Structures are given as C-alpha cells and as structure tokens.
Image (cartoon, rainbow, N blue to C red):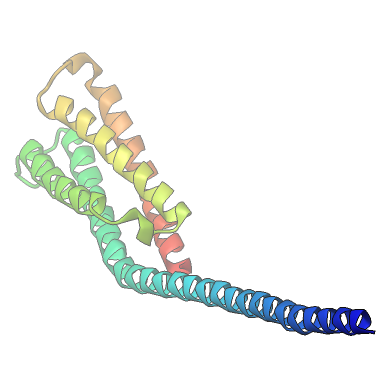
Length: 189
C-alpha cells in the first residue's frame, strides 16, 4: 500500500509538472509565432508604404519635369526649323537677307548644343522608357548633326558638301519627327 501510494504520488507529481510545462512551452511557441507573424506583416506593410511613397515622389518629380522637357523640345524644334531654313537659303546662292549664313548657322547650333546639355542632365528615372528612348535617340542625332555641321562650316571636303547638306536636312527631318513623338509621349504621361 505504501508502495502504491508513492507510485500514485510520483505519477501525480509528474503529471502536475508535465502538463503545465507542456502548456508553457506551447504558449511560448504560440506567442513567439504570433509575434513573429505580426512583425513580418508590419515589415511588409512598411516596405509597401515606402515603395508607394517613393513612387509618389517620383511621379510628382516627373510631373514637374515634363513641362520643362516639353519646353526644351519646343525650343529644339524651333532652332532646327531655323537651321533648316538657313541651310536651304544658303544653298540657293541668293543673299536676299544680306546675312552671313555660316555665322547664323553656327550661332543657332550653339543654342541647340546648350539645350542638348540641359536635356542630358535630366534624371532618366523621371522618364518613361519610351520617352527616355526617344530623348536618347534625339541626343544621338543632334551629335551627328553637330559633326556634319562642323565639317560643313569648316568647308572640309567641299566635293561632298551637297551630300553632307542632304544628310543634315534628313537628320533634321528625323529630329522633327522625334520631337513630335516625344511631345506625344509626354502628353500621354
């Protein structure tokens, strides 16, 4: 009987320790799991908030930069129309306007190069992929026109001057089309 009593006490004592211990461990596990899930959820929400906020800031900056880009493109369009006119008039051989066409072409293109530098400083992250592609293509063609105009104005290789002039006029036509495409792209933004 004493033996049975001790066995009963030992089992009750073990059960008394085991059950609260198990529940303590399960409670700690459950508490840690819930706290971890809530922490992960909070971090995900913070990341999403930060992304939304940075996207909102980017869109705001982009919206503010679009009128500036549009103005640059309008100015470039006007300069290239003037350049086209001056080049065509210089080719007629008639000096109706009594001006130095080479000097006027050079001065006009210096303004183009200033605008080109301004366009190059625009943060490409503010642009759509299409707008950026169009602007980069525009900058490249302006560089090509610069090269052709430089050789034209320095009277290098006079035999090919007519071809060079035609190439410049073709590039100006292409730029005019690009300017229109950029304006459409900016308006659609």
